[in-house]
Amino acid sequence: MSRPGDVAAAEWDLLTDDVHWSDGAYRLLGRDRGLGPLTLDALPALLHAEDRPQLCRLVTRILVHGQTGAATVRIRRPDGRTTTVRCSGTPLLGRDGRATALRMLIRPVRT
Image (cartoon, rainbow, N blue to C red; front, side):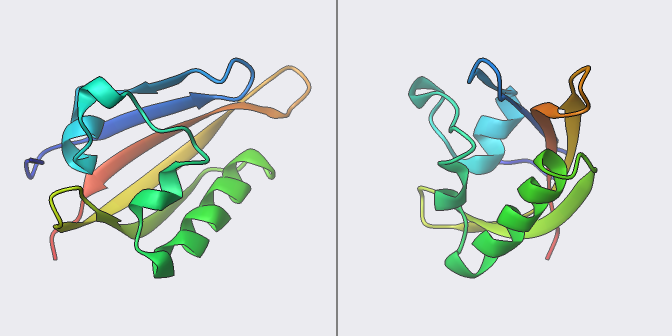
């Protein structure tokens, strides 16, 4: 279960396909640590269908345009509860200026 002060961190490395989540990410997103972190492609499955386009726009902004960005979305937790979170992302850029990884902080939003 997430706590009010939880800040989750996640990183998706585009070059190696490595994914790293903080302990807070597992708690906040309600995912069993034994299942490992979700790939960036699988992440939208956690969201309400109406919020998926917003996450897609955020990821495109970060990875395609190399810009930071943020979005507020609703997560469907495995226990059936919905948690509203604020996702703030930033790209890690390679020498050629292209995104090589995405770093994201995820915070619960009080509703």
